[in-house]
Each structure stands twice: as C-alpha cells, then as structure tokens.
Length: 317
Ligand code: ADP
Image (cartoon, rainbow, N blue to C red; front, side, top):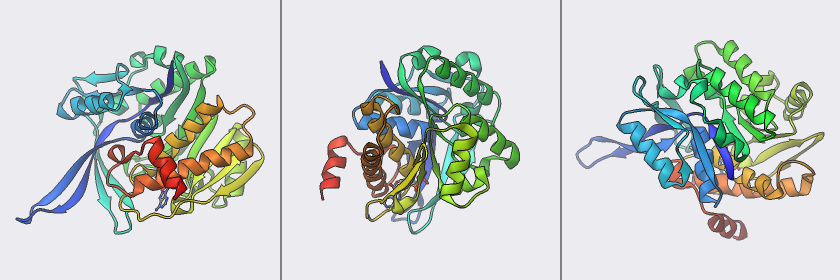
C-alpha cells in the first residue's frame, strides 16, 4: 500500500542567497513544486508516498528524480521527457519571508504529461490521491489529470486538492478559473488560501466563500490557510478557526504544502474523512499548523520539512 500518491509538478526553485565576498549574486537551488512538497512532508513525517508527473531528460530532471528517491518517494510514475525541459522557478523574497515566482515553463515537461503516461496502478494502491491546479490549467496535463481523478473516484480513493493560484503562468485567467473549478468536482478535501478562495468564489468572506464551495461541490472538508494566523476550516456545515504558532519566519516557501502534509497524516491515521469529529480535526489542524510554522523558520521547502518528533517537541514548548 501507498499512503499518498500525488500528481503534478516537480521543479527547481532558484532562491537568492545574498552575495559572495567578491560581490557575486548567489542562488540556492532547491527542489520544489507543490505536490512534490506535500509528499516530501509526508515521508519526513514517516508515511509512504509516490509521485506521478513528468520532468525533462536533462540535468535538472535527473536531479529531481534523485531528490524524490532520496526522500523515499516512489518515482516510477515520474516520466522522463526527451522532448521537453524540466520546469524551473525563480523565487523573489520579500523582507518578511514572503515570496513570488517567475517560471521557466515554455512548455515545461510537467504540463506535457499525457493521459497514457499516468501509472494508474499507483493510484490503485493508495489511500489518498492528491493533485494541484498547475496540472489543471494546460493541455495535455489537464486531460491526464481529469482521467486520473475519474480513476481515483471509481476506485474510492480519497481525493485531496490544492488549487494553487499562479497568475504569472496563466494568460487566460477566466479559463484557468473554470478549469480549477472543475477540480472541485472530484475533491473530498481542499486546502486553499484566502486569496485563492476569493479568486475562485468571488467572495472575500471565509464563511460565505466556503459555504458556496460546499453547496456547489459538496466538498466535505475545506481548509483555508491564513499564514501566521493559522487556519479556518469547514467540515460539512461546521466552521471554526485554529490559531497558528508564533515563529520567526525567514522563508514561507512550502508552508502551505507542509501544512497539508501534516493534515493528511491525521486523515490517514483516522482512516479517511468518515466520522471525523470536529475535535479530532482541530487537533489535526493544530499539528499541521506546527508543521507549517516550522517550515517557515528555514530556507527552502523540502529541506525544511520536520520529522514527527520535531513537530511534537515544538508543540510542547
Ligand atoms: P501558503 O503557503 O499556501 O500560502 P500559508 O502561508 O497560509 O499557505 O501557510 C500555511 C500554514 O503554515 C498556515 O496555515 C500556518 O499554519 C503556517 N504558517 C505560514 N506562515 C507562518 C508564519 N509566518 N508563522 C507561523 N505559521 C505560519
């Protein structure tokens, strides 16, 4: 069995890391990509994971497959492309640890994943299937993702969704929004930021926006991450808020992904979403908030993921 299989992008982030003694600008090279980050969080927390996606048959693609394997993520579903290059991202860091991205993806191998390249046997063996929005917005990855979602649903695999907002990558925002909304048709649980919720629903209010999603798509669990303020949730008709932890953030890259990894750990331990009590969910979110907070205290996403023991120790402080 595999705990979580994720489909989507894995890429390399180049993050500014100051200047050297002779004044040269330095970059740190970090593996990233939201779905791969979620898996890395989970394996660091002690669970099993597999990745489905596509990278270029270039130095970056080989490096990324190696990174996944070193993090105990199964890579047989990660196709190597001779035709397309590995997707790259350049990170801009603001003083408060917040970041934005410029992508090199013209087209990146991740968006060229074909339906027949998706190893469905990985989905068969999984308790949870996770996907993000990047593979939802370009063809042929969009069709490949939809067919994987149909397959996961048919096999009764719990489906988790992270509709990341990537305006820098989308020339047609209305088409992107429509395709992202199509992802909700399949999702049992969704992790979303306030900004993403407002873009998708057109509503600023958390209660109203999440109520609309629930009505439209019957999404069982919606988590709205609020940065340092923690997380707002909707479990069926019940809503609430779980406060975040206070830390000195240096780089928020991967905070939301690691939060989701921490949250999925709780869902795996519960055996799904059936009969999930609100108090259990709140405890799961508190753990996930701690994972997210810890990740912001270090540079990068995957290298910053904590172990379960580190999270528990941090929560005791
Ligand atoms: P995203 O990375 O998707 O934008 P957030 O920035 O909201 O997501 O972060 C996800 C989670 O990580 C938050 O819900 C919170 O638990 C934790 N987190 C993020 N930033 C901070 C911070 N500055 N201090 C403490 N916790 C944080």
